[in-house]
Amino acid sequence: MEYIILIVVLAVLILGVGGTMLLRPRGGRAVRRGRAGADLKAGTGTGASTESGGGTATAAPPRPSAPPAERPTAPTVPEPTLEKPPPSAGRMVRLRARLARSQSGFGSALLSLLSRDRLDDDTWDEIEEVLITADVGVTPARQIVSDLKTRVKVEGTRTPDEVRAMLRAELLGQVETEASRALRTQRHEGRPAVLLVVGVNGTGKTTTAGKLARSLVGDGETVVLGAADTFRAAAADQLQTWGDRVGAQVVRSEKEGADPASVAFEAVSQGIESEADVVLIDTAGRLHTKTGLMDELGKVKRVIEKRTSVDEVLLVLDATTGQNGLRQARVFAEVVDVSGIVLTKLDGTAKGGIVIAVQRELGVPVKLVGLGEGPDDLAPFEPAAFIDAILGE
Ligand code: GDP
Image (cartoon, rainbow, N blue to C red):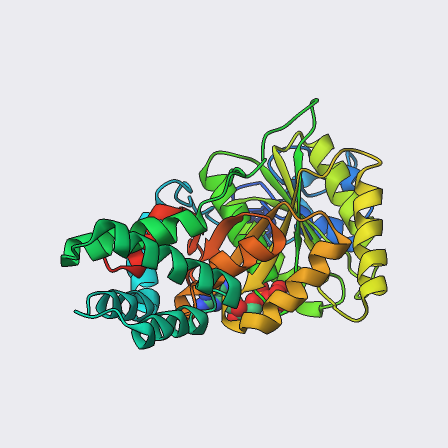
């Protein structure tokens, strides 16, 4: 009998120890990396609840009374591997083939017309038509034709190389601007640079904010993303995904239709607190009424300016939308001081002439171009690489 009791006691002891071992957390760390946004999401306005810096939120510390080994722990979320995006320099050249594929029709049509033996009025009309079809705009198209006529007269002979060089110089002259295309992304007065991304929904605004955050991370900057497009349910999730992939904090609101200005304010506060280099804010692009838009964007800007200045307002424009897109761009330019244009979807249209039209129309340089749906398909705009792609060089 005593033996039986002893065996039962031993069995209970062995099972008990084994069970305790099963409850012990593996790795001993319940840390969720790169999910600062998820915590902020639970209560926008509580940015202080996250650690400053790398966007790391830790689980609550264990209570001293609870023996750590026996406390059931929250399942450990595997640490996502952060991607290392390539730097922004040289991207336009890398993506030139894509640009050449979409734009070369326009370039080769111009080259072949200019290479005709006789450049009569009909040919010049055709040249103007090609330019207008490529969305260069009527006035710039006429200007280009008149410049080309003068160049042909002055230069006389027209070998294929000369025609190409002449057209290249003319188009480059139309695309180049005095204004700098560099993005203002440097910290100043101990605060991050603040960039607003504005534009009509569907133009690729949120995608551009995500791609740009990635490209800035690739250039070694730390970025906080603000999901102030609170009217489109998916926009915050979309931005969160972009941020998570490269370790950028995302400030967002749980509530659909929340005040975009309060999200923007919180993002900037978070950026200041975590000493980020850049705060990038995606705004709502509802073009309901001009006054509505003005009120909304005006408020976002005013609220940010309570903490720091806005360094860039980037207007996103879909290159495939032509004149309609230009009209919308004009409305935005009337309500905010646009400092740069991002021309998206240039890979999907042969109407690259819109670069000339929009710069002329708004008096603002194209700073970035979208050349595909891939995460690194956003490039700083380089006029020479652009014209060379059009001319198939
Ligand atoms: P938003 O409503 O302005 O925020 O638009 P989204 O960012 O959601 O983008 C709308 C669609 O455009 C998405 O399917 C994007 O993948 C696509 N898009 C954005 N930029 C580019 C680009 O440069 N090229 C191409 N081909 N598609 C793009």
